[in-house]
Length: 164
Image (cartoon, rainbow, N blue to C red):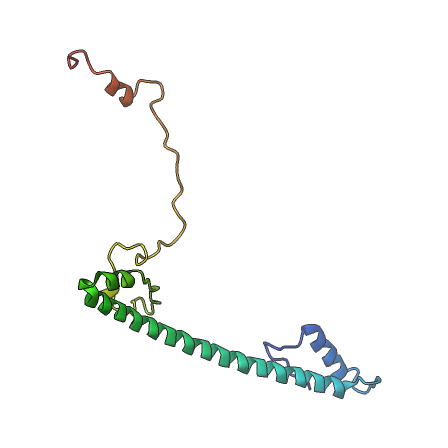
């Protein structure tokens, strides 16, 4: 009588109780609670869970559409900024205003940037890709020649034939 989908919104304990009322306690009626009342309530919960799932899917689709629109605007903005910088080469004031604008990097899809690299300045930390992984461990530099007989002490004490 009661379905148990994999991602059921009803807890396992309540499902066990519903199952007991559907089988062993099917003929038992308590005030305001019996198999039919529990079944209706369970159906209502599943109906609301389906509504939430549909709303979540719509929200996810709306977020995806928003992200795509923002990415498109960013691409156009970066292209416009690059063109404006070329246009403003002879206008120092406008050029300074344009240089103060730092647009974020584009989101990469399929391993390639979606934006023309026209506005990208080589060697700029804002445009440099982030290093991945854990930073390397800093290892202490061991002085292997601490007794004074190493190469460092030999440089300090030049042979008598080379001293003048």
